[in-house]
Structures are given as C-alpha cells and as structure tokens.
Amino acid sequence: MFGTNGVRGIINKELTVELVLNLSRAIGTVLGPGKTAIARDSRMGGEMFTYASMSGLASTGCSVVNLGSVPTPTLQYMTPRLGCNAGVMVTASHNPPQFNGIKVIGSNGIEITRETEVQLENVYHSHEFKTVNWNEIGEITHYTTAVDEYTKGIKSLVNGDKIREKKLKVVIDGANSVGSVVTPRLLRELGCKVVSLNAQLDGSFPGRNPEPIPENLTDLSRAVVAMGADLGIAHDGDADRATFVDETGRVLWGDQSFALIASRVLAKKRGSTLVTPISSGRLIEDVAQKAGAKIDWTEVGSVVVSHRIDEIGAELGGEENGGVFYPDHQPVRDGAMTASQIVEMIALEGKTLSQLVSELPTYFNTKVKVPVPQDKKESILTALLDISKNMNRITIDGIKIIRDDGWILIRPSGTEPLYRCFAEGKTQETADRLSEEGVKLIERAKKLV
Ligand code: MG
Image (cartoon, rainbow, N blue to C red; front, side, top):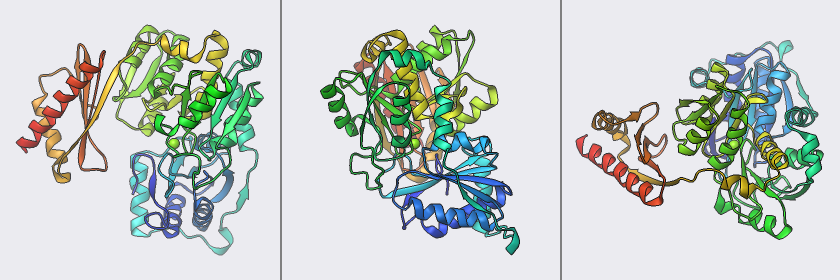
C-alpha cells in the first residue's frame, strides 16, 4: 500500500473513504492508544478523508486533534509538541490534482519507518482492528494555533532584525494550497514586502500543477521580474519543499538552494555531518568539503534521510529536488523553514540571489529512462552489480559509478518497468557521454538475464 511517501491514489477510485477509514483504524490499533494529530492540504476530498480518518481513529479509542488545513511540516512540528502518539496528513504532495493520499507520522514528527508501514499493512489486510467499548471512544477536538506556534519556531531560528532592515520584496506562489497559509504571513512578519500568487486554497489547482519544477513556474518567474522583486518562492502541494526564483526570473535547481543553505549551516561548526541520498551530486560534495563537513550517504527518499539525521544527530540533510532538513528546527523537509533561510542569507550577505548562485560550482546532468521487463528488474540489478564489480562504485541504492570527471547512478524505478540512469559531469558533453555509458551497461545486463 505504502509508496515512498505514504499511501497515494486517485480520489474515489484507488483512494476511497473505506480505505482511509480502515487504514486509520489500523493506525489507531498499531500506534495507539493516545492522541493523534491530523491535518490536510487543499486537495479535493481532503475534508471527506479527514472525517473518515478521524472516525476510524476514534473507534480505536484514540483522541484526535484536528489542526485543519496546514502544511505537512506544521503537522510534523506539532505532533511531538502536542504529545501525540501519531500524526495523519491527508495529502498527495506534488502529485496531479486527481490524487490524494495519507502520510503517517510517528510520535517524533518523522514519517513512520518501513517496518511500521508493514505492521499497518498487516492489520489493514487482516482486519484485526482494535474496537473499544461505547464509553471509551476517542474525543475529537479542533486546534487553531498550530500555524502561530510553528511560525514562531521558525522566526526564533533566523535573524529577524537583519531581514527587517533589508525590506526585501518576495513573490510567493503557494500552488493554491497550504503553503499559502504559512509562508506569506511568516515573511510579512519578518518585514518582507510580500506579493502572493495562487494563494486561495483550491483543490482543482487552477493556478498551476502542484509540482514546483521550472515548467510550472513561468508565471512566478514573470511576476518576480515584472514587480522588481528580490526573489520568488514556490511550494509544492503540502509545502514541505520550496523552489526559488532569482531576481532575474531564473528558476534555481533544487540542489543549488540546498547547496547555498548547506554551505552556511555546515560552516558554523567544524566537522559537521550532512545526510543526503546517493542521488545528490558533486556540488553538494564540493560545498561539504569546503565547509570541512562529512557526508553520510543514504538510499533515495526523504524518510530515510529524516531517520538517519535523527539517529546520528547530523547538522543538516538535503535532497537534489530542493528538500532541506534543518534539525535545529525539525529533522524533516520544511518549505517555510527553507524559504526563511534563503531570505536570511540574502539579507545577511547583501548579495542578490543570482550572485549567491553564481558563486557555486556548475555541473551538468543528463537523465535517461531505460525500459526493462518488470519481472527482470531484480535480476538485471544482480547482473549490473557483477559487471561493475571492479569499478569505483557505491551500492547503497542501485549503483553509483564514480569517475574522475563525473558519476553515473543506475537505479530500478520503484513503480514503473524501467531503470533510471542519471549522469553528471563538469560539461554537458561529459554528462551525455557518461549517461550513454550507463545506458550501455543496462542494455548489457538486460542481455545477460
Ligand atoms: Mg511534498
């Protein structure tokens, strides 16, 4: 049932009220008894699924605290602070409008581990739900100050006086979802002049597709330039990520904003540790090396990064898609925290965002998909491991082959019948050549199985 970030499906087809009800009964059975926090983004069916989930939880004796429409990181921030045993987020993050889903949060505010997901799946499929007596049914209450407490937490970690002095002009594209509930208000309180785009909560996503990638952010780019703003900020559907637009209207790559934050946070302490998935590139390695920090590589996926940060007490985590984990605040991706860190950097260093980015090393990459038969995915990986055994490589998740002039990452897709091949080099030609090499390796492995 669970994918890389919770359960997702098309509303009323794959993701039904019955599924959410029974999944919530399983959550109450496995993670209860106690208090569970719940929240939703602006997606269609959000309210319907929230009620289904609250009913399921209450039937197991869990009391439910409904935070309303707030970002996933707001729910994650509040879950341990309200003494909850779990959190339920009704969201499908950046997926297209017809999707909704459920993210399950543990008592520490981090999405549950794969092991707990398996426990939930077992209870869900066996229908061995806990059902309490009539006089033990959980209470359902509303909690209205989550955003106040969450924004207060973020403001305590940035230099508000410096930001206020600069009177920066910021355009915020909230994707017609819950990012709009937090970030415009937060940055206004920090003294920025804020212009909002797509700020009304609307699950049909009339403004743009909720994934904050360059092709969806042309309106934001144009608005930043037309208004002479210092930067633009775009969130995904549940605002755990932020993508940035510089003052010239250029959309930054996720690894550029991550690298800017990493270079500042890691340099604060000698010997810091950065947790990042194997898919991150040389830019992050360069930045970490310059700051005297070590890198702890993980499998691809935000949940493993969060748990690893928590486990080893790392100073920072990040992903090449722009997810930044700042554990002084909380060890999970957090779009509003990330936005505040970039705004603070511009204010403190007196440089424009494009200047800050131009100081970073540049790398080029190529991404290719190679179709393979679904039932051969495993055996192709075994063959690839054998073919590459004498190469300089890392095999935490797929195979990352390290070369002097770049690297190649070959991984099977979790859901589709294909392999993904990412390559990165100092020039586009190098990236293309390495990518071709990766594709040839996959084709060779295909012939061997
Ligand atoms: Mg998200």
